[in-house]
Length: 62
Image (cartoon, rainbow, N blue to C red):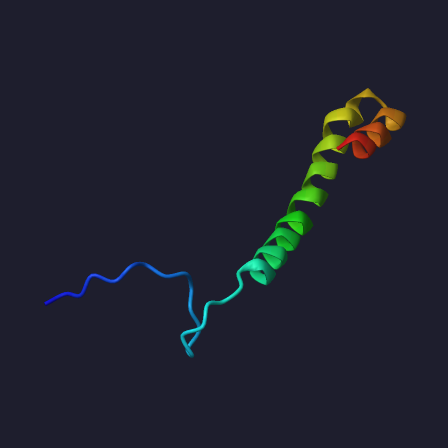
């Protein structure tokens, strides 16, 4: 017979609840390291045809 037990948060091998905050922080940092350079590159790419000074503005405002 299947036992009806409530779902629990992620647990370690010892059965203690793990704190998800460090993983969330590292995940946010990794996402920022990918998203920020691509946003700057897109800003420069969009404004580059308008001239060098506006390309710099595209990098600044990204």
